[in-house]
Amino acid sequence: MKKYIFGLLLALGVASCDIVDVLDKKPAFEADLEGAITNPETVELALNGIYYNLPGNGFNVIFPTTGGPFKAGTLRRQEFTGEVGNTIYYSERYYPTLSYSDTYEWDDDYSIIKNANYLEEALNGIDAGAFEGNRKEEVLGEIYYLRAFAYFRLLVRYGEYWDETSPYGVIIRNENPSVENAKKPRATVAASYEEILRQVEVAIEKAPEWSNSAQASKQAARALKAKALFYSGKYQEVIQAIDEAVDTNQNLPEANYGDIFDKFTTSEEILFARFYDQNDAANTSTRETAYGNSTLKNQGYWGPSKEYVALVGDDPRAQAIFSDVDSLEYRGTTAYNLKSVKKFLNAANNMPIIFSRVAELYLMKAEALYRTGASISTAYAPIEKIRQRAGATIQIPTTTEELEDAIFNEWMIEMSFENWHEWFTQLRFAGFTERPDFTRLFQLNTTLKENYDEECEASASQGEAYYQRIIDRRIEAIPSSERNSNELAEQNPGY
Image (tube, rainbow, N blue to C red; front, side, top):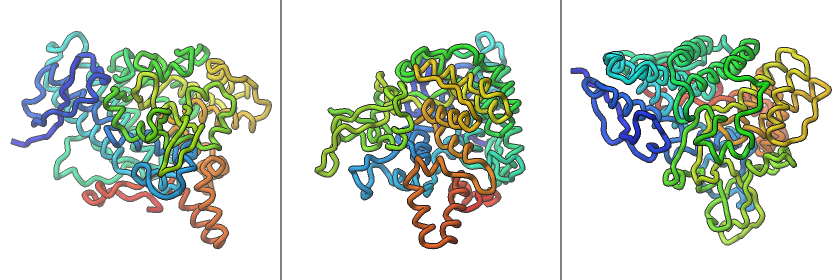
């Protein structure tokens, strides 16, 4: 009998899919698919097992939380620690120069896809009457959302997502793994988006209504649809999709910016996230290394770059973005009055990874309106709502150049340190031309700029080669774990 191995996460409260309570529970056993998932109880266990594979599992939370900020120039090792040694791994030195690629998120996302496939097959064999109400269809909607979510993350991290004519998309794996299908080529970017949007439409139809941000929902699926269209550059369709998801003429759900993070388990602002309880958060590399206070001197080694602090300026959101580190000791030297990143922790002493929230839809709409030639006042209106909530100064731009700067800055301030928004914003505003304009990236990521300048000083050809290297490394390498077993998966250019 052919066996399929599928990890199941034992959890409390399976009917609610409350990930807050289960993330510190490790998968307790493995079972073959045939005969393992046969009733609603085991379906919910298996579904929780899929959520468990969301990027950021355990120690590897460093990658979905800090990689983007390091690359974009918003996060940096505290300067007094110098350039030698490592606080954690070596990514803090290699990420800023775009020299680091990880395999963790690739593996996590394909684990989501694989386990979603297993569960869908098992679910199809169980009568809907065994479930309470419409729960079988809701589970199916969650499966489709999680699969679309994983494909989207893979596409924008490892694929040329801005060019639908590109052959460098994702590997579409909608079947249970076998020897016969282990080797598969990458789909085109256009086919990748088509698959993501196909899955999303099923999620919009079948997923449950939003009840908490740890669970996939119709609202999260509508937001993902808008985001996929946004990253593909279909800005007219983006505007329509956002209008179907949220009314940007209304105030944002959370009246206070800081409450988004301090009340994230109940905040309607957050559409989808991964949560950690206190014990799990205490053991993560990000919390131990990035956050700081006067009683825990082993924390706070990472902080916002001074260039990013200057960009935020006197914006009221600074108090929710940054935290003060009264003193920090490193190799016999103590520094005082440093800043660290408050978003990496919060008042509840746990640490969310926010994948989707309402303000992102407002920002996407503002940028889509700008890129489709809407009037300055129309494009700025969603930004105005965000700044009203923050209590920030509102000054309507008078030129398209000022509007572009306003939208860029709002992305960087509102969405900083939340799942790589800074990095993708840097790429979009650099432009996806043959020679992108990395001026904004160099202004914040001064380490990258210094390396580029050194190459230019050596020779013009070396400078050009390094600039091309930055262009190539807008996306990460297909991991060797995939390439070694699947030679049909073509590597990205420049690697």
